[in-house]
Image (cartoon, rainbow, N blue to C red; front, side):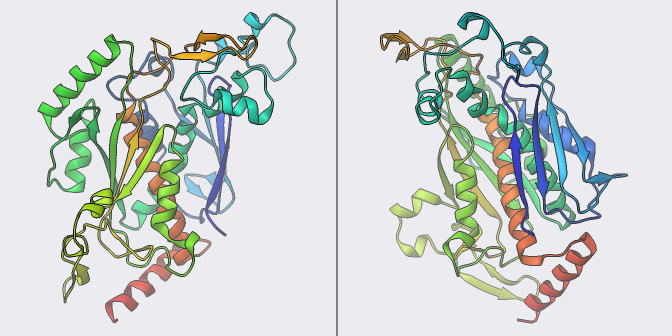
Length: 389
């Protein structure tokens, strides 16, 4: 059974829901850790008022008993604490009233799904589009990814994320261990390890906000402890780096992804791109560098996985861009919904969790098993095979 999930729910609806299928039995879940990951998504300098309204927590309403998964589908719920203000507007029952009472949206915002979705689904109230296309949906994606992260940590796979750029401000490189990086970025308002860069980024975001604008940036995820051989070269849709790239590009507002040195590889000769193969008794087969970000031929090579994604500026602006009223076809300034000046630190957290999900999925495809104990035996046998190769 392949690991998968489906989510449902709207940004101002009563809750977000997901059902995870394919988790093995006997995986112990740390509920505080799940909610800690959701809280991380809501942090970050530049976030708007909504983060003060919603304190996201996840409830598990199926598939877990006495702290352990049972092998049945796991059902997750993230409630919307602001639902009381939207019960009439978002009610599933028909309501009578004016467009104003229904909060009908008929002026699409540039950069959003509003107009495309309205045209595609023949919806004259664009709220039906924006409610589902909102980045609020990433809350339930983080919840699912947090479950996957705990599964991976059971097998010694550790994941951390950081911000490498916000607008014009770039964070300097560092050599911190993954555990130290986790600790330092968690204490940073913008998820960087350098205190001076943090101050510069905060001032930069303040200026962007004062101008009524928004700003994007680049985030990075690093994964250590991944065994050689996740993914496969034999078919396009089994290449794990390709599947990670798709997952990253599916995050709201992400417009680019790279693995390892990424686009820089197009500017360098091969001798400065490829990682030499080495061997010793302690490490076995390994690489002398990690420019390819832990992948060769669509498969993990045992080096840390390094993934970066670029997030565009949030398109909802407090100095709205011009748009067209779909009722009158006349030019208008786009309607404004609550928004953030910068959500790049939060995007770093989302990146961690979509990458966690794809690695967990590939891990289960490789090692199979209906229980944690069966998977442990399979992993042990495979690692023994690698040692004897």
